[in-house]
Image 1 (cartoon, rainbow, N blue to C red):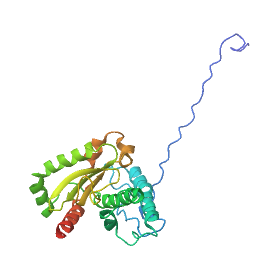
Image 2: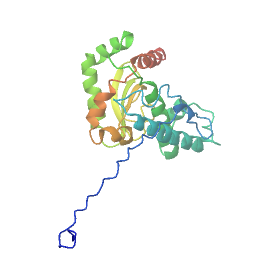
Image 3: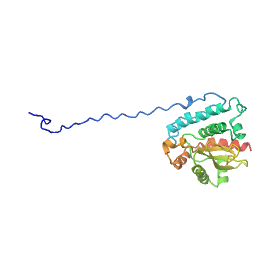
Length: 243
């Protein structure tokens, strides 16, 4: 008997789909393994795993931010100060007397200091509201915690391009809010806002873009869920004690 093919019929070809390959999650590194290449400044211990702040700050962002960006600032700062009179100074001493035309130290020293503070004032299972003398100061200087949040959110939102939002203790011992571009900070001369930083928020895109894309306000709102107010309070008490 002639086949269907012989009679001019088209033979139906059924393709069996290939099994879909599951994307394997790339294992996260260990923040304790991240070390500076050498020099007077060391990588500050993160104190929690890369995924500990999720879902507010995702694990991949934390890993890239800490192990690449922060490490790069640290290594470049060490290169910039090694063999100079800055080598034996603390980062605070360097920044307070900084020659703002020294871009290598300005950018990398700022990046090192800012991120070192940033890791410390965040923690898993944190957020909420401050307590004690810090809470009293916030109520006194801003009117309420909600008023503080409104002003801090505005500073972080309106910082054009890359930069930071800050809560500082100023020369009068009062709390103040402001922002700085790039890796500048309130310790530097003529930074726009002056004082001792007790809270900082990184609004560079590398701090949030993988998870939030261009939705910086969503990232800012999420940040309030990971603020380690105990650490901020310790910084506040130390800053006030020096006034």
